[in-house]
Length: 229
Image (cartoon, rainbow, N blue to C red; front, side, top):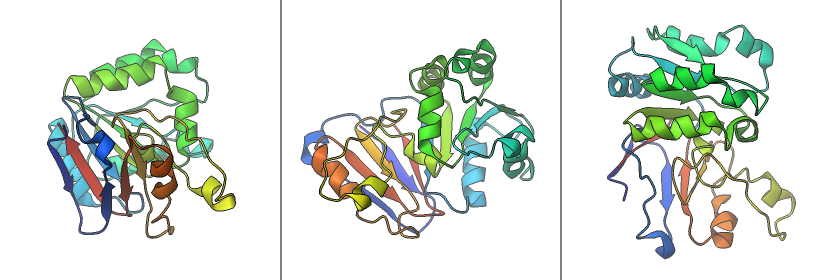
């Protein structure tokens, strides 16, 4: 069972549970998750991340793969949000090639990390690069040994078992859709983000109608769920 889901702001997090999942364990790991609903990441969230990894000098892996802005990644601009807040020990795990996701260099970086951050963009980019790879398995290992993963926007949605976008449902509301798998750090769970800002309040409804074993989590911007066992 989940021991705690704690909010780090007073905006919106909706947890919609269904009877079929009441006895199933959604988070079976020893580590923790900080799941941010996109928009501004408050300093309190960075500070919580720093506290959980043991300080801003501890090793962090940043996964920026959700964004399509390759020049921004290659220039290291994705790291500025951390370095500008005093974090000093950052490396990057990023590829567009699923075979590259088995690179021993990537695995070594995650094994040495106390925490991982997954940035925003398109969650399909993350799944296409890492689902079922050695990086994916090493992220599970990080959680099993008590590490922490923080993600925002697409980096939040990818943490669920099934991924939701909502766009398909809006275009064809009467069509039964299938939902692609996420990295499943939270089991039997689907996570949506930017909920109020992007008018996504009801996007989880068809997902949960089609998948009665799913816990729905809808997060507004500048809001986070803090999850531990």
